[in-house]
Image 1 (cartoon, rainbow, N blue to C red):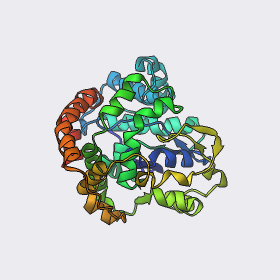
Image 2 (cartoon, helix red, strand yellow):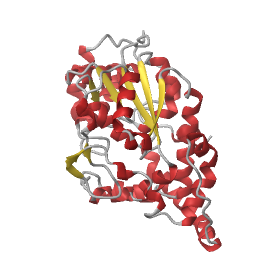
Image 3 (tube, rainbow, N blue to C red):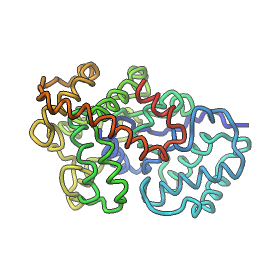
Length: 344
C-alpha cells in the first residue's frame, strides 16, 4: 500500500521565478538543521495529476529516484550527465527508507527528500523549486509537517531579471548550456512573464491565510534581513543562526557573481525604475498584474508607451510565445495541465 502522509518537518519555497526563492534557499541551507536541494522539478516533469493515486513498479520507482538524485547530486537541474548513472545510489536510498510496496511517485519523492537530507546530517529537507506553488494542495495534503514560504517580488523587477536571465551564463554561471541561455531569451516576452507572475501569486492566494503558508516579500528581506530571517526561522521551527545572513552574492542577472563577498545585497531591489525596462514593458507588466500588485503592496508607475512600440510588441508576442512552447515542451510531462495551472 502507498505510504500515509508524513508529518515530519520540511520546507517548500515557492513563488514566481526570479523572486528570491534561490536566495531564501541559500539562507536556510546555512542552518545546521536544514539541507536545501537544487531545484528538483518533480511536479509536472516527474509527476502529474493523472499519476496521483497510481502505484509504481520497482523499476519505475528507481527511475524516479535516479532522476531526483541526478538533479541533486549532479550539480543542479541544468547539469550535464545521464540520470541512469544514479540508479545504484537510487536503489540504496530506496532500500534504506520505509517499504515502498505499491508506492506512488510522490512516495518516492518524499523518501528521497528525507534520506538525502539525512545524508547531510540535516533533519529538515528544503525544496526550492518555484513552480511548486501550483501544487500547494498536494504538498499540504501529503506533507502535514511542511512549512511553505511564498516569495513575492515587484513584478517589474522580476520582468527585468527575466529579461537579462540569459546573461547568467556570462556572469558566473558557466555551467548553463548555451541552449538554455537561448531558451531564457526566447522565454522573455513581457506579457508572458507578467502573466506567469500573476498566475503564481493567484495560485498561492487560496492558501494565503493557511497556518502553514507564509508570504515573504523580497524587498522586505533586503531592507531588514535579520528581522526577516528571524521571522522565517520562527515560522519553520528552527533557531536563528547568525551565519544564515552570510550568503554568497551570486545569482544576479544584472552583474557578475561575487562569491568572495557575503551578505544580503540591498541594491537588488527597484532596478526596474532606472535600468533596462522600456515604458512599453512597464505598461504591459502593470496592465496584466495591476490587481495582484495592489494586493501585494506595489504601486503602479502609470507609464505610457508609444503606439508603434505597443503594436510591435503585440505582433511579436505570438511568435515568441510559440517558440517558447516549442523549447519548453520536453520539460513538462503534461504540458496542457501545466499551462492550465499557470494561465487559468
